Image 1 (cartoon, rainbow, N blue to C red):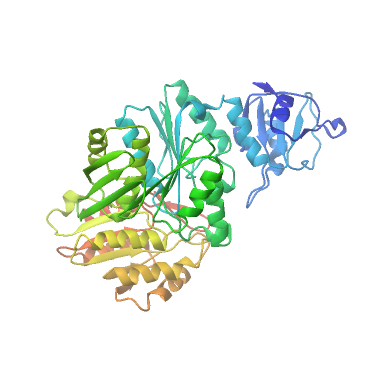
Image 2 (cartoon, rainbow, N blue to C red; image 1 turned 90 degrees about the vertical axis):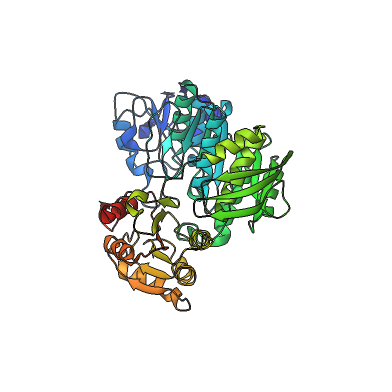
Length: 501
């Protein structure tokens, strides 16, 4: 616990002394919260503006729940009348300072844990999953925060609804993990999280770039703004960190330069081209992939993993670079990679026992961008299936420009396309499907339209024949389907298994 004035001295801004408006005093602060419903006595409420809500509108409620002070860029439009002092911390960058203050209050727990941040358009979840598993193979006591789950060491697995949780949550979770003996953490770092300063106060030992293609333009506005946000992450790593960069990414040099300019060391990886760590001689099969690894001070050695596709070799390379930074032996790396379990919702097999006598396979994948779909469909094509039957759709209230591109990819790489709803949100599902179908005009895929996702999956399964692969794309591990005013339980894996049963 610290006095609010001490936080102001450390992180800037000013402490309001306008007692006429009810803002006065120098209270003790014990925690930082962004949600007024989570306030406890002694909390500093960060009243942040958002896309839909303005945190200042909840300041009075936060104070009523026991907040000792409010952090804001503007003065909330009310006076507080009560029998105790309350204080207002005015700062021009409240998002950032909320994270910095939370980290300070918790003793900067990331400084005492080997912390890895993974960012990029596709592959973040798989890279984080592999890094987490390999760190455990090294005997590390590890936390994982990402799209599938938030799992602090020594705590329960939960999911707060965001790939990267907010900064106060992260610092609190890392502090609890440290108290339980945790000594490392892996975080997926989304572009939203970078823009919204959710990692403020987190000290990364490693920052990983998987790739950069079009995504989240509904939020960032244009591709350059999206790339610039990613660049900020690498520029912020600092002198004690290492940036691990996919050299096959079009923006590799830009991200590497940002990292170097900030004082970080840079390590590059690639499939077949010049880089610090290289994979070559890929052999992709239906049950896994083999390749030769060379670089970062090691002699070449063979590796096998139960993950399919060139894109997963890229994902593995990023994780292996982390292991080599920690001086893991080739034998530990080989054993760990060979025993990796599939990432939930990423080319995850569905009900193999039920399909044993039917001659075709069913896979679920989260691929929801044109590049991700292309990677997954290409990986499946390289396993030499009789046909690829792809169930897919596009999300509502998101970047509309990628819809025809996704249609183009499926139309050209799948044999049969079953176009359906994803998470339509506030949009009309059939209108989304029309925009997606427009991109399929030049493809050769046999097209079926079915707006009901369950019926679409049932149709795809009914079309499966010997040697086929049915890919259900877009939602992966997600357990609900989101409409305008409600959500329904919906897990592609569970639905497919029920239909197969």
